[in-house]
Amino acid sequence: MSSSEPSEIDIEAVRRVLHRTVPVTPIDILSDALSDGLSMAMIPLRVDWTEEDVADPVIHRVNVGSNPVTGRLNFGSFRVPLDRVSGAELVTVNVKAFGMDTPAAHCQLRFLFEDGEGPAMVDMEGNIFEPAIRIPDLIISWEAWRRPGQGFNFKEGLDEATYALTPRAYEGAQRFLEDGLKDLSWNCRPLDLPGGRESYRELLLTALQAADGMTRSQVANRLEWDAAEDLDDDTRRGLEEWAREAPGSNEAIDEILGGDLSYQLLKRSCITMAFFTVDLCLKRMHLLGRISERPEIKVLPNSLPDWLDGLAHAKGRTLGRSLGKIIRFVHQNSTVVPGLSYRILEDAGLLRRENGKTVVHHYFMRSGKSPYGSLKDRLIE
Image (cartoon, rainbow, N blue to C red; front, side):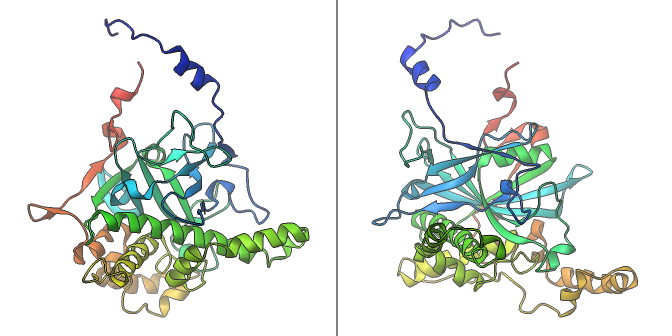
């Protein structure tokens, strides 16, 4: 117990907190689903863009303040100040075995902001609360969209018909909490992009446009399904117009995916979508004349063997006969393994280096170390 005297209470500040209405949408992780059975908790993020400027878009469906213990996920909406982005990191979320990180991992991009200038929660009209509720970072993560309670299967992920592709947004601390409860560690590698700070702004803009473009494409796709036949004409027209009204988003996702919205473990996954986003950002910077040379990022192997397409459904002896091919392929193309994929950016010279080595910050909840400081200091005893 501290022996220091309590500070003077600001009655006005208490009143503001008690009477504040925070627009969060609660989702039941285990039961809430769309008409086709896909999880509401994994629904793609969406972005509202201002017509005259894209400097401060509003991003919806940010996972913030959720409690996995109760099975409740909260979606919040935040105004994102692109001009306040201070850096970005490639985060690999590693599975541990015998206390050590394994190559099995998930990849995501983490965006950092100036102190006290991060994304601010907004009300239903897009106005920032006063005093502002801000988060220090933002995670953009591309994942396999599944049904509530359905786990991820690596083998089935090779089949393009198994999972849809969904871009999700998190407050960084929320994602770290969820990963920590699963005994997963974070390895954060700061990016070192040509063009300096402007490149990180462009990278977040590109990431939001690609994610938003995916969401709009998903909506357009669903309007063609039988499940959408019950919509009235006004609702349908409104959704069709919304799906087309952000040309920057639609162009970004078309350039990356060419219209394919499915998840595929090697072609369209957490790794490839993160690196395609970095690659498109650098392409834009080069076309705009903001960088003199465009680094080459080898996102995928030059060619993928035909036998990989049938591996998702292989069983018994067929799967056994493929084991040698799998081992050789991974050995020759180690960067397809999430935990080793950082080498793609390392080879392109796009990761920060100090003393001749790539900078990596390791965090693990069980050790009490997090990107946000000591966990012990944040627990009330």
